[in-house]
Length: 132
Image 1: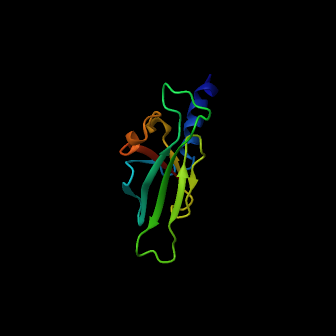
Image 2: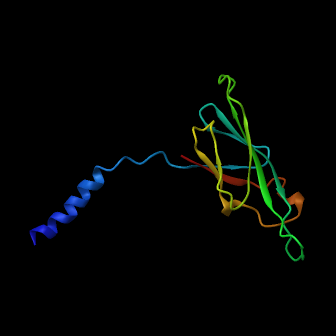
Image 3: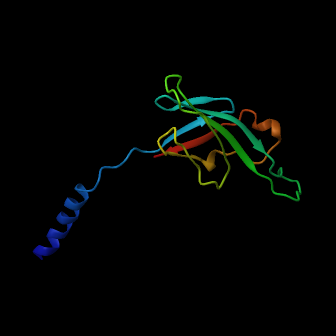
C-alpha cells in the first residue's frame, strides 16, 4: 500500500524536473496591406491574397487555390539582413524564417475565407501563427 502512495509523488517530482516550456506561439490577424511587428526588429506584412477557387454554386474543371503572400523585413538598424517574401496556402507546412531565428509561420486555416467573388477578398483578414 505504501508503494501505491509513493507512485503519484514520484510522478510529480519527475514532472517538476522536466525542461521548462518554451516560448508559446503568437498569432497575428492582418488584412491585405497590413503589417505587425512579429519580433523585435522584424515586420511581418500581409501583401495580398489570391483566390482562384471555384465559387459556390458553380461547376469548375479545376478546384483552384487560395494563396496569401507575405513579407518579413528587418528593421533599418539590422544591416546585412535581407527581406523574405513567401506564400502560404491551406495545407502548407508553413514558412521557416531565418529572420525569426528559424520560427515557422503558418496560416490559421479557420480564419480563411470561403470561396467568393474576388472583390470580397480585398479586406478579408487572415490569422497567421508564429511557432517557435
